[in-house]
Length: 122
Image 1 (cartoon, one colour):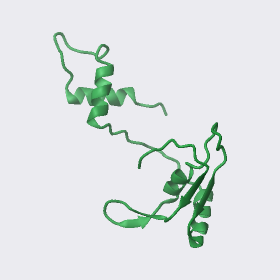
Image 2 (image 1 turned 90 degrees about the vertical axis):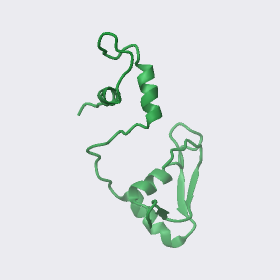
Image 3 (image 1 turned 180 degrees about the horizontal axis):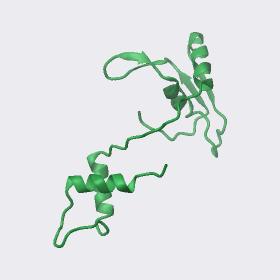
């Protein structure tokens, strides 16, 4: 999905299904909460939001999705697009460890540096 940073006070779901590239399927509780979370933002003029649906039959699903405890994320994967990797390499070009006379960085070395730089502590 695409992240939007909008100051909105209300999200109205027209449907609780989406096409995922292969088939139409129900939105997960996590997806519903992420989309609905656009309504009302801490520190904005719309700090409290309203989430609703065009269809009364969807309201119980919305309510359950916001009450449901979501599983803890144990592991995440960061897969940079090539432009992100190029920007990263460009930003650290003066700091990367290189061999004498080495002018460029291999893709393997760039990916390893990217991984090391973005590694988090447990």
